[in-house]
Length: 186
Image: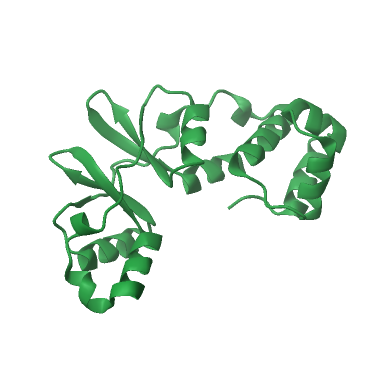
């Protein structure tokens, strides 16, 4: 979860920055920083990252070092298979407290599914649809990145996708979600 307006202000002041200094260093306008701190607008993930990066650098925090995907990805990846019934996939998501997962066959991603998509399907089609195979309702596969890619690239992909699969050579080594990235930003 992103910091609240009050938390953004607290973090900025704790780092000893004025709104103007923060805005200049983050490449944003001072009025945008003021609106974020007032709670007038919803902060986008990329904007929050820029603000929090500047705050960390100002504090001299060890977290301002170059972030590596391998340090924040979750491994092993929890996944389902294309022919798993929706009911099993829902149970797997609940059991592991996750909101999305890749659909894999033969070690390769063939699709993805989110809890939001499943709720829509079950609300529209009813409980009987829980016996349907996930392959009949899955979305396109999650984007993939090499484990050595810069964290900024992962953050960019996460503005368009709920998660990114991380590859180490030909194998899926982990998964990075929006929630994982938000945790490292705070």
